[in-house]
Amino acid sequence: AKTTKKIEAGMVFNLSLGLQDLSDAKNGAYALLVADTVLVTDKQPEVLTVHVKKAFKSISYNLQDENDDEEQNDSETEAQKASKMEIRGRARALLEAEGERKKRATAANSSAGITAEELEIRRKHQEELGRKKLEEGRKRFENNEIGGDEERDEQVKTIDHYRAYSSPSKYPV
Picture 1: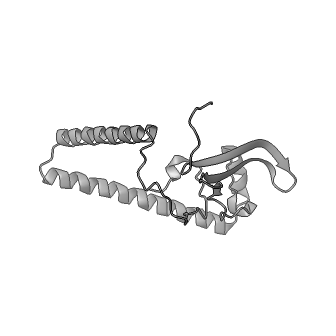
Picture 2 (picture 1 turned 60 degrees about the horizontal axis):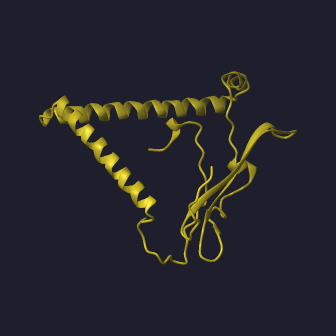
Picture 3 (picture 1 turned 60 degrees about the vertical axis):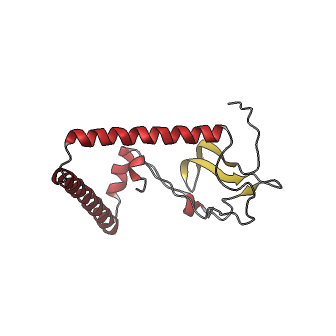
């Protein structure tokens, strides 16, 4: 993709390079994504991810097909099975707690005299407010009116770790 936007001090970029269908004796077949987050300054670009651990053990994770999962289950230790059961139990408890919270919220709304129609009107209004805020942000970005001081402190916050999630359902709330 081509752009005519000029790179300026204060901009942040995530530079990444991905390779797939790699293999070696130690790791077998794998894909690799190398990435850094870089801040453009008046002087020299600054790598914000310089303190991130880069050891293979710290940055790798394994995604498997369903068939691979069945093969792995055969070789799981009892401790691994117990750990998985504990995690599933916690997840189930969290889902049940969320269901209870929604029931209480519904009960609180009905006891406050709020009807389902009023809740729907409120939800639509919130969606509209969200769309307006998003549009305002886009306009500010297009006009280079991003908030903050023009002068930047010498201290720059850096990122000290990455987190990877296998699916959106795993994202923290």
